Image (tube, rainbow, N blue to C red):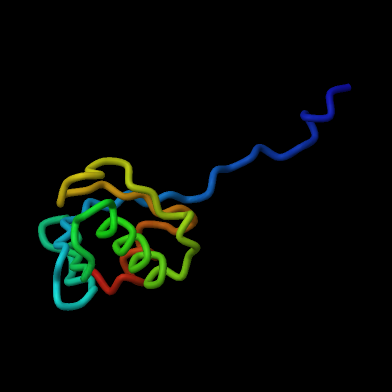
Length: 101
């Protein structure tokens, strides 16, 4: 008898994809809100050597109360418009924690 038959199927943790518009070099790091399905984010760090991306990940991880390793940039590594994945939270919970409606 195969042991895997008795195990429940593994389910992947929830993953939420967000479309972001990131403005580097701002006076303060903050989430401005959701505009036409795009989350507007400002970060203090400049867009040099990935510092703005790091700051964006730090900000999102802090606001979502998840480890930084759960936030991944899927598209737009060198662009202001990005697609980001946040693991472990539903879309509704993610937007609630970010204060975006």
